[in-house]
Length: 638
Image 1 (cartoon, rainbow, N blue to C red):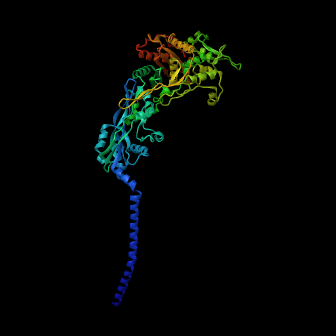
Image 2 (image 1 turned 120 degrees about the vertical axis):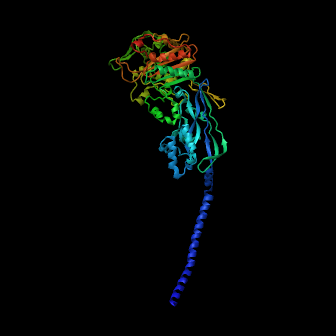
Image 3 (image 1 turned 90 degrees about the vertical axis):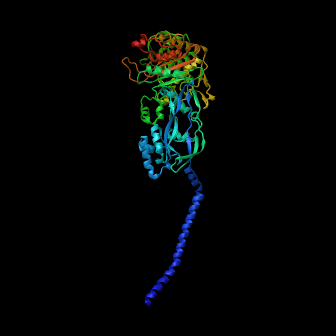
């Protein structure tokens, strides 16, 4: 027993000795724990306090953006062309979507919207990069009302999913006006990064993507408003704390005459061949206002406001006919015989020829070879006999203008450099500054240009071809129109424009767009007189006489421009048709330029243009056609 007691005593003594060690260890552990907790509290409250306070406030207070109403666009007579319409959109605030329910919420939202879940995920991925965590990100626009109501009714089960009413753009008679008005679309990532982000846009904001919508985006947009909302844990609004109303965008008053635009679109649509394109530009030569601008084929800009029409958008973008391409300002074509006005002006100004200069238009020009070989034959469209300057313009004689441009016999000709100089002075080879995007400069070829671009020297035949608007020279329909305006008004070049005035939301004029003179070409009075007389005489030729308007004298110029392609059985290649005109000739108030792809000037361009002018001047429709050389298979006039 004594031994047992002794063992118990020793054990107790050992345990007593261990207590201080355990106590010290425990105290150290507790000290470390409390030190860590104190440090963490200090870090959270002092170091990160501001960020956490902001996050806490964001969790209870949210800033909701109020989209402004975009400015309405009117024609010159206050006919609305682009307006706003209410539309439902669905957005998601990712910070309000519980992680463990994300898949369910996205799947249910996608099912109601009738879209794949992947589409919602892609929309968030595309637009979240520059968005704050509590910013709603639009995942679907133009949602049908019944689907929007379903989501609204299920909002209690779909935290983070919001339905709101936003204005969308609606274009009235869209295909008729689409190339002038343009359309709305989401900005590309590059556009957003380089411009729109700095201007306060979000990735979900639509912007003007073409036409006047793009060029006047800053006027049309307006100023977004906002409201601060108190929300619950699911992001659902509880009450409104404060609101700043949105400011509507400014209104645009266009120079376009909607009635004339409809007329030009109708006539072009009815008269051109299926699968081809055409342009009509009507302007006021007194101030540069564009009264009508039609480019066919056209498109319905409303498809870009409706996500249900994604297939229509894809079809537009892939259409080989390029319906979204504004040929009036961006298309570059050989100007054909409309360029003879440039050659004629240069020849008269430089003394190469005068009103009485006579040239034998005998069907072509044979140029002797400088190398002793066979002569080069430059064809004409017909045999017209000896013509003076006015007759040369009226009959559009190639030989006449070959001679003025390149020279023949006793007439030295302008030569390439002087011809190119007059072309540039008269507006070819450079943009006009029209207030529409993507204007093309055209091309005025020179010896240096050909050497640098084609890698060949300039041949005499290049000058002869250029003199009649063929070869390497290219022009836009707008450039041909501008030359016509300068002839009509005496040499003044106005910057063409489609916007006449900017008004505020209440209709008060903020600014008017005045005529801007970009240059003045000083021409001899006799030069203008001869060119104008020649253009008036165009409507007195056998081919054109039946298109005359009884009480209005119209001055015009036809053009048939060949381009590369298979030739017919008569050896004639494919052509584009031009006709440019102004009237009344004694006091011009309108000019009209018509371009018809794969057409002829006298056979297509002239009849279309004169039908438009006839109705514009209130003279009814043209008489039925009678047999002419053009309709019986004879060569077509340039």
